[in-house]
Image (tube, rainbow, N blue to C red; front, side):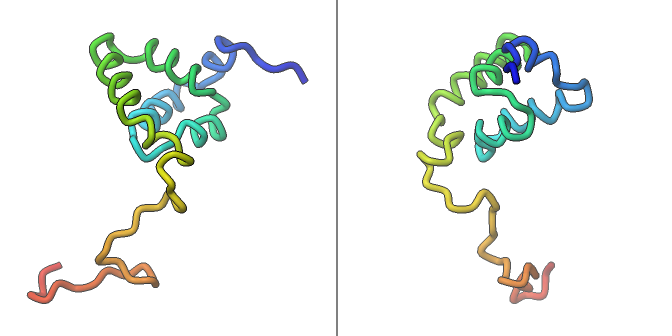
Length: 104
């Protein structure tokens, strides 16, 4: 099977998925590998996609942050075993511990 070009991969994203891709790219915890698995966009494709869909100042801030915090977008570098966040107040069964003062 012939692989798609960069422009074809970017143009294959539906209008409904554009905000999802942008949100995933902006999140530090979401790796480029997860974006590639879900939307078939390689890291270079994500950069071009963000350049097309963000204003220039927003893109420049995101690019600088992604460069400075690149270890957060790469699961091998951040040494993360699980992508799921778990609060210290959360029990093994998923319920939340009650506050001592009775507040919820």
